[in-house]
Image 1 (cartoon, rainbow, N blue to C red):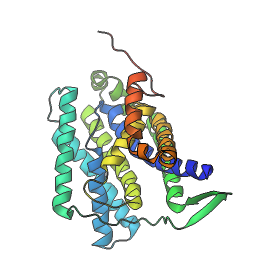
Image 2 (image 1 turned 30 degrees about the vertical axis):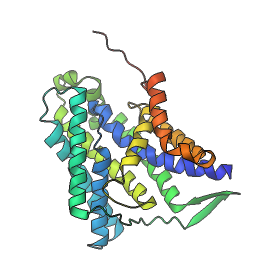
Image 3 (image 1 turned 90 degrees about the vertical axis):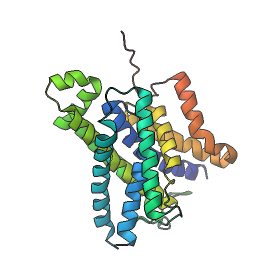
Length: 290
């Protein structure tokens, strides 16, 4: 029983981490907390739903089409909402992303309605495998672990060895110096938003397969992914993965022993971490001297 609780907690925690990585990529590049991240992923999931159920494309064709849409959506949000803002404050950026969130939710409600819809992946929950005695794992969990591992390896290689990855790191450290070195900061921002939107769409499809799709279905996963990012550190991608795993384990344990506390675990994590270690468990804390 205890082993199964750990496995299920790790599975949902890694799913939180996948979505948390999308949040962190934007924050690492531009120091913007994108509160529209959940609704961007929600809209992309509805596009996948439309392609699969209405047009009845094969899953992998629908997946590729959805990834293209997600990238274009992320670029559009950055270009249309964030770029026109001239030297906005942190509060101004939060308000802008909240406005984008409301707009995207309204678009989804207008197009697909507010009723819940079934969304399925080719990874079955019913097809299970016994890892060892008392611990069962299904295809959905295996797909989540494989996706997270592949993404972590890709991001490590991308940020370490590619020119664009180095440009993103340089932009995060000092935008003015990056411009002086010839880096087109605006293009880096657009790429970060498009790439983040694509990762968020992948995570959202995993969440949708566990529940249903409606215009508000990504609100709770976003809050938990944000809690995982705060716990691990908003500047640390490996930290977010570890933070997501810890959060998933905590939620599953609370859900088993104290079910009434499970809905507020993520909020407690955010409050405790911000009070004790604002930079997170695995990110360095920098103090700007003026």
